[in-house]
Amino acid sequence: MLNRRKAIATLLAKRGKDLFIVPGLGSTTYDVASLGDDERDFYLWGAMGGAVMIGLGVALAQPKRKVAVITGDGEMLMGIGSLATAGVQAPPNLAIVVFDNGEYGETGQQASHTHASNARGSVALTGVAQACGIGETYEVASEAELKVLADRLANFDRTFFARVKIASEETPRVLPVRDGVALKHRFRRAMGVGEKGL
Amino acid sequence: MSVANAARAQAAPWQDQLFDAVKAAGIRQMSYVPDAGHARLIQRCKDDPDIRDVVLTTEEEGVALAAGAWLGGQRSLLLMQSSGAGNCINMLSLIQTCRFPFVTFITMRGEWAEFNPWQVPMGSIVEPTLKLAGVHTYRVEHPEDVAETAAAAMDIAFSGDLAVAVILSQKLIGKKVWVK
Image (cartoon, rainbow over all chains, first blue to last red; front, side):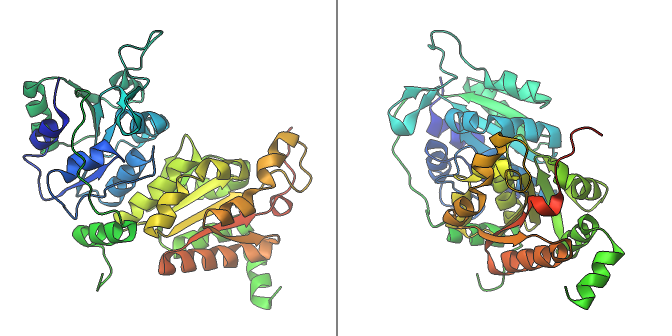
């Protein structure tokens, strides 16, 4: 299984200047921040279940830019309906990547719906995405598969969904900017839509 | 009613005036969970090539969408029925924390001549809960006030980074008609 910090580094090694990222709250925000602070990242510290919808709003508003939502299984499950909404809209510039360890890492490693050890069943997020009409999906569990995904993320032209199976392990927290107003202004400035002087 | 408003009310039904206000405010994304009271506005927006219509599974999605739209430089509008207001509460933290402009038009149930008691618990707390969540509420009771109130709400929201809900009262919308 993949280490989440190595996985994020491989995934974004070829990040283009037009790729804007919405990381889900908790571990995926820290993962993206571990690569260095970037104005094109809208680090979430809350809004659980909203990452895909925020990414969708950006993607629809900016058809010439690319948007990657990179979130965890718990955050994705809370906003599971947003996969249906994204599937219906299907903008060509939206990528949804879920780092799936089957756990709520922030709160003590409790099993999520995707955990393989669930006694009576577990949820396959990629299957959900497919059922929501997202035609291009990836199951990623190896370095080789991760490199294929990284190449696609650097050059994609339709909505896709990827589940990256990551190991359950504690990683050091990398805490980015928490000031939501500052994050908003700098993201808009990087997008070229910010107000003068902000 | 002012003379100007009276003339406008005569010119077109308030639903069409509302669409004109939405267009004048430069709305480019309209998200919604359907409600009969919004049917005309939804259809007018869907028919407009410059407005992207986004049907939602739950209203809180529209709150997050509005934040994303603004991050990308567009203005978004969320349409819902009063029962959807409660679904939005935690996601409104995003709006308040980041001071995103946010506008929603809410058609009311559970008040005037409501036949369904299941609509009353949420309907009766829409305004206080939204206020607690940092959303200003503008209530409309009369057709001639709809467009002007909506325009004022969108103006203050997008120019001042504020959250505003336009509450379209059940008296304005009229009793739900079951059999057509």
